[in-house]
Image (cartoon, rainbow over all chains, first blue to last red):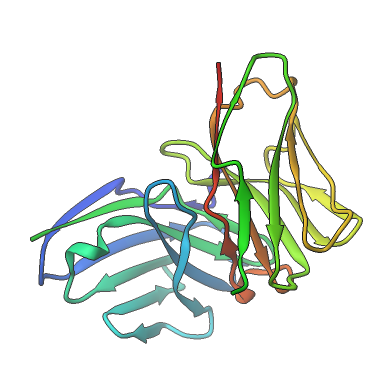
Length: 109
Length: 114
């Protein structure tokens, strides 16, 4: 039973354009949401998070939006850079953390 | 520098053997976790520990065992009972259990059954 879903396994964008990564969840008890970035053969690193009491959190080029009624969150990267190419995991937590399957982002120069 | 260290980076196991993956952290975190990554399935929780000498099963604990004798260490044993052990294993820690604290991950161990 996947409680956190990332339906797009891959995304390709041009350098300088916006990257939008999407995530859906089913458990309404989740109260904290995070995005992690992962390079091959490395562990995920924390990117940005948002509490369920907010609908937006911004950190530099990265913005996370939360739509609780739709149980949907998204990560916007503007402008996208080639170094952003990685796998992005969405995660949601009540007490335990649940991860999506990841979206591989490729930013082309 | 504080961090979390997993070893070895690559591990090969013969069928029927038990192997132990090491995870050590010097972040003074109370909680530690083991995840397994398979293609297209994200990270699945194997075991977690909130405090020394205590641990709980995650979603896919069958065929695995853990111990938490020291705060810094949370080794994972993949036993011969695990039917499909080939995967990428990730250890993580957090100050307390709960996502709002954020997890710090190790660099992972890739286990291959030969």
